[in-house]
Amino acid sequence: MGLSDDDDPSMDDSDEALMAQVARGDERAYHRLARRHLPAMLGLARRILGNAADAEDVAQEAMLRVWTYAPRWQPLAAFRTWLTRVVVNLCLDRKRRAAWVALEAAGEIVDPSPGAGERAEANERERRLAAAVAELPDRQRTAIVLTYSEGMSNAQVAEVLDTTVSAVETLLVRGKQNLRRALGGLIDEDD
Amino acid sequence: MNMEQFQDLLDRHGTDLGRWPREERTQAEHLLADNAEARAALTQARRLDAALSRLIDKQDADDAAVMRVVAKLNARPLPRQKVPLWRLPAVLLDLQFAPAWPRVAALCACAVLGFYIGISGLDRRIDRFDGSFAASSDADFGSLVFEPEPLTGERL
Image (tube, rainbow over all chains, first blue to last red; front, side, top):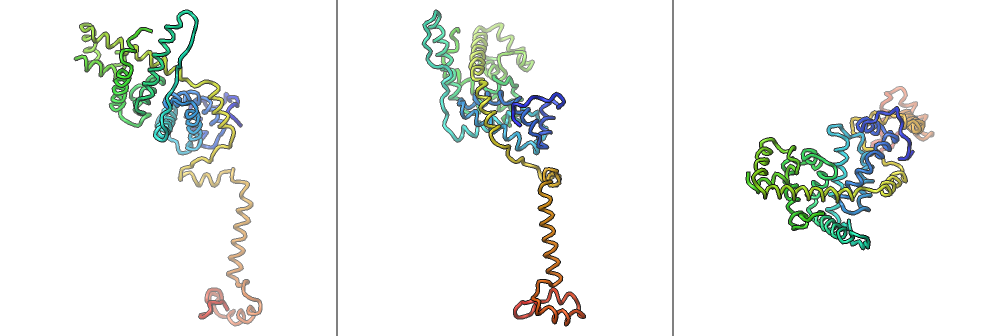
């Protein structure tokens, strides 16, 4: 049985119901759950790590943990929040062990078409912003990624990072201060 | 509220003033109405928000990457699940252990047979069996089974 199996309409569709089935060893429910959350979790890992290959490893490990720890999982928080926490912790562990690989989000683009100069400037701004985000301390970058990519409130970010709302706010303040400092007046220029 | 406090609150709560605490929002609105520097700070924060959102959208996982992870997950059997201790009895009685029951039964039968042989004295040498059994059969059965010879430890 694989992740490409068709959905069974008779199954309860909520994450928590699927997780209860996974806890009883139901591989079909596990594959359904993995299919649902894998793209988002892979994207999140990629944003935090800035490295596509590592992000794939983290996403795979996180999904295996869903299966392994399902019998011990308690629905104290939403499944999505728990899974996000697993992915974030795996990313932070990996960052502690490995040196940061700079993200080349937007390289030099040679474009001969009209308006190419403006686009090149925009790409340069984006490249510098990516580099500035990459240079942030891990927890500051994680707080910013969770806020902007997942649309989480400060309270939700605090739950994922297992800390207080006030600590998350401090991470955001310091992170944005660092970004402004790194970007200088670049962010004030019109797109 | 001064500019430093306003910038701090912008970073804490974001550029959507509707999500700020009510009292601070009211003070911020007054500041924005009177202070051009505050309006410039709000504009700059919104630009940073927009730039971060664009950057983060570009880092979305592509379908090919998702399929690679799916392929890796499908490539090998799932690991054993970590079952909490309070569920262990249920797991042991689970039907998925059914193929092992004949072996478990054979093991139990061997253990019972070994115990019976040991307790009935059938493991003693046959040339010593008749005399010792005859000598002690009218005595207590416990001395036959459990009392060894005092010097060598050999059972008579």
